[in-house]
Length: 278
Length: 130
Image (cartoon, each protein chain N blue to C red):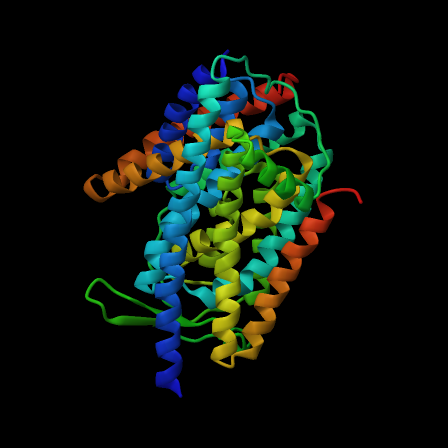
């Protein structure tokens, strides 16, 4: 395949990945890896490098809007970044010694987990009373509702959430994904942060988490400009298009449809990993 | 005091929001320019991404090579500088929040931000064998 053909296929493929990632709420990286490895025969290490670069692009792009609206809890994000960056560094270091088949199988399992998790019903919750540690760290906050009135919320189980965030960071560094699903478990289920705040704060954290692992990938030569360029451009435009569609359609039906597609991708990934084809 | 803190938090939100947005678009534009140059020069060549060859270069070396590459008009070097710009966007966001917490005299968060920067620093030094 020529470089020109590869670039054009990747631009289109990454656009679709960004679109599906945004519509399913799973992020673009999750489709980029199967596309590059199974679809185009690219080595999984290069694929992880390219996916991480695209994660930085999309997360910074969409975080911009939420930060300005004041929904993102920046203190919470920066505090939890201690956990995610530490995890990301560990993940990237494991990835440099792990065989491709191991990464492929782990990736498939994470995909299954994430797609099932994306279908769960999310209820908006507001915790009135913060735990003492959360108060000490000033992790409580407020966000504007649709009328612009501030809704105050507290948080608890800080250490549990912090630990889960470490795992989220490790998965991100190991697999080249934003690991939104793990972050949501840490913030929604453990720390009881309102859904709107947790998703935007998770997005806000992805950029810094991803640079912690990407500098390792960069120095090891995993970041190939020829692969990254069409990937980051395609994913970014795809996710912008996705967020426009999301405003006008029923995300529930879309989510179910994409969860099935992603489940099939996951099985494919695990099969390829076990068969030693990756 | 409460009122003053609220003001700086709001200002920080605006600055960080703008930084993230323009940073990404700048990085992407540079990447697209590099990509065009790269395709014009090498578009007909065959790809060789099937097997991974590990390299071991420090970030300083990489940036040095990138600068000389950009001078020679190398497409991959221009794409690479776009990727570096993309990295700098969240990194700069971290530096900005560091100073903003400093202005707010929120020393706990000055410390927390420093720890995050330190971890990224460590990861840079862990990325290659010395």
